[in-house]
Structure formats: C-alpha cells, structure tokens
Image (tube, rainbow, N blue to C red):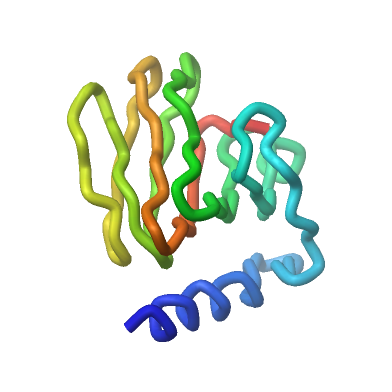
Length: 132
C-alpha cells in the first residue's frame, strides 16, 4: 500500500498546471525549505504574482515525524488535500486524521498545525488570497 501511495505523490510531483496561456511543469519548480519549520519543504506552484494576489498553490512535503507547528494565517483561508503519507492536523483545537484523500479547511484566523506520521506527509495546499 505504501508504494501505491507514493506513486500518487510522484505522479503529482511530476505533473503540471494547465492554464489557457501556459503550462507550468512541477518538475521545473525547485523544492525550498520552509523558513521556520524543520523537515518541511515546498514547491510554490502558482503564486501571488501569477494570480494578482487572489490565490496560491503549493506542494508540501513534511518528513516523517516532523511538523508544521501551530500557526495562524490572519488573512488567508487555507486548504489541504492529502496526496500521500499520513499524519494529524490540529485544526481549531480538533485533531483530524490526515490520510490519502483527506481534505481540510482552515479559515483565516484559525490556529492549526500539521504533524506527519511514520510515512511522512505530502499535501497540496491552497491559499486564498495568496500566501506568497
């Protein structure tokens, strides 16, 4: 089962964003380390500069047993789609199981954190308006 989950993420990681005027290949976007949370990296698929600040999309990888610590986005609604791996999200004080196929929504101003399990965690995160 673990291999099947990883294949889903690998397909996503090597995927693309199709827009009417261009295609954005995910393979050409570098992984960057999160500036605050150890063991977290992301690919910024589409950012504020591309969307006039309306939204941004990010692939996020949290290595096994690492966390995106508790934080708040005062001005953005955030969504997560679990693409591979497992973990727990604490959203507004409630623990939510994160497994493939889970979608979670964090309204602006709500405390949340994400803790990866033994398999690590791979998310497709979206922010409205854009995070960066």
